[in-house]
Image (cartoon, rainbow, N blue to C red; front, side):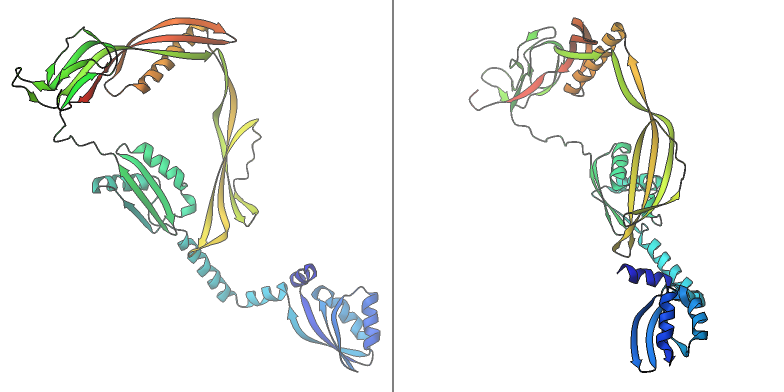
Length: 395
């Protein structure tokens, strides 16, 4: 198999040898290291064979001294194919241009479809996609990956909760889930409002119901705050109590801050390489710069190329190499305490709803151990402590 491929690349010529000196000619070829293949005797004065194109000049010298004649039957191999292609250059160039254009068209964006979004949201998404280059006529392998497009859309648009990106051939399909404000319930079941935790009441906004506590009063968890029973005794009406009761509560947070921290940061120096892949073979086509970074971060995006609906064994890849360096951050004990208080506040804010806020903090305990500052911090918080409790018939 290897010889067949080699012979195809170098080219072979089919020959016929006629005359009385055939054996002498064949022996001369062997002495001159001329390879003759598939030698067959046609009759007592004729032999057919194949020879390599590169040995043609040697054979022509030998045939002059031999008592026989040489006839060419056929020509095979890459050199002859190339010669025919050059001879029919117009047709070949037209075919190559046609296949190239068809391949490019197969890898363009021809349709962008958005489902699940209101018209105004769909228009805003289309504008955002155009800013990222996702529009009709753009080559797909020059665009971001579907995962990156999804990430950018979710971060750049505040009115969508989730977006799914799917590429089908030359079409981009986007499935959108919008952020919908919960609709207010027209009718609520009869209910009381009770305390969700122990707190000191700081403020109240009661829309419906009978308040049972006052500002600055300390309440326990489960204690009734607003009653769903209104009116005089004996003539009471059951309603759904509604409102917010803010109370002062306390949160304890444990924080550990290392005095010395090492981490990698990007310096801003980078270069990009472009590759054209055929199977497992990668051919560089642009960006031959090769900086020797001590530490680096490599980001690779590989885009397959399609011909119509079929995925070809070729791809376009961009490799971004970013320089990194190791940074050591040193905190003094005072700075570590300040950072610890900040980190603790962030932890507490994650536990609060949108109405909650931190009023103050107090470091209960502080100690330094093995290059770390360990803090125990108490945060004074103002939050809505109201939770509902259904009114059971007979209460």
